[in-house]
Image (cartoon, rainbow, N blue to C red; front, side, top):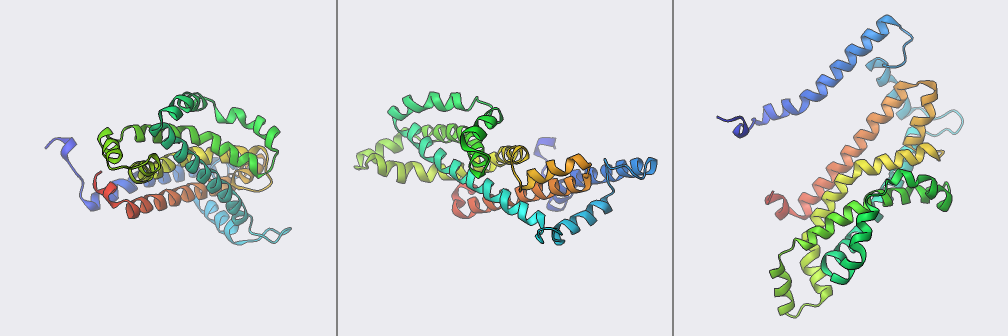
Length: 270
């Protein structure tokens, strides 16, 4: 049997999925043990037990000054900014993407602009955003919007353009207006793609959020990571990195579950 046709059984699939994580953990544990054996005061690779103890402390112990658990406070601030930025981006992308895909006038007007905008490095605009919108929440949310909206818009507009022309002609023959075609023909077909785009954009959204928080913020996951880096507190940094990764995974899993629930026909076709 050719390798391309070999499908692992469910137990083997679970083993193969877990293997890279186990390998990374073992490699880290070995590297940490070697460095700590050579220098017990080494901070670059803290022992896994140290990271665990730090995680328990960060998740449970309140700050002595504010009496708040800082990790939960940082999480709430970052998730609010992230979800707000991604939500607004999804809405803008849906509206403009459908307009470009359905309306020749809008295509002529916005297609080139969106293409050029997608080439602008979002992080290069960060100083401008801080000058224009200040150092508050707005600039961080706007950075996420600028960072992921052009990509999502271009993909959604192309998805609308890929709708068979026969469907649009049939809808017009039955007397459907442009608005009805947009809502009843195009929208159901691109909503699954919108969720996929949001999932694909989450990594970039986290990057822009952490960058903005690191530069100008007094609360947030990115702010805390860059605050403790000066003390070489790798146990805190790694705890926050692992927590961010887990949050990103949970959001992605929730979006995938939503797609399966709302669009089972889409999943069946894959």
